[in-house]
Length: 345
Image (cartoon, rainbow, N blue to C red; front, side, top):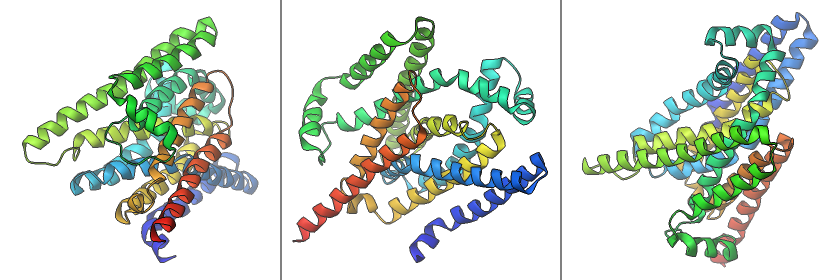
């Protein structure tokens, strides 16, 4: 309990403030106690949804943060969380409407406040592009982890050994992702193929651009005496990665409510728990104690990327996504505990 209070105290405070704000917002919209309670409950469900979808996000963040300079760790956990909460949970949905509807930011805010159904319709119309972009980016993240000659620990050995042996084939992960993109493009309706391919290539180019920029910045810092992967490059990588993880939660939130401000409150609460989990994983060196936990997170990312591609054809409830991701991480945690017991014996 003491550990939880230490790491999650800010998350608990934000939860109390956020749910109180959701209750007040519901009262302002409905002028009734039942409406206020409804907003309160939806805000709580949105927070739980974001947390369940973000276990893998916290683990991957922790894996990258442990290699970063303490100064950049602090910057990510302060500036980064502000970007994650306000950028992805508020600005991103507004930006979609600005681009899709061809209106200004102020008009988009008015649309969200006064015509939430129309706002949600525009967001829904952009779902194909969002899913294609996010699916491509996250699949590249997962495959880059598994197709790596330097990877030393295997969880599912038969599969992971084969992938590691294939790491000498340059660009293999790009080829695999493009093959998946072409498969889905071949079964999509013809009028949607162009948008799908454009967004998928955008996701691929964004991943490669972040990698290239990260290498350039890290090399520059290395020449100045800084540790590799310690600074701005890793920070940018984590921000884009967080954005990709957030796509699913932001879009799924509109299935529960069309109120942008309530969505921002619920997902913002969830983002604070991701931050707290990340700090705990880094400071307590949990990834070193549970050797397969990181593998479970990247399998979860791979599954999420496939689900995002599948969502271009079918509706898949966010509950399914959350349960599958949590299952991989849970099984990996159990496998790690069993391994530690065997080692002690």
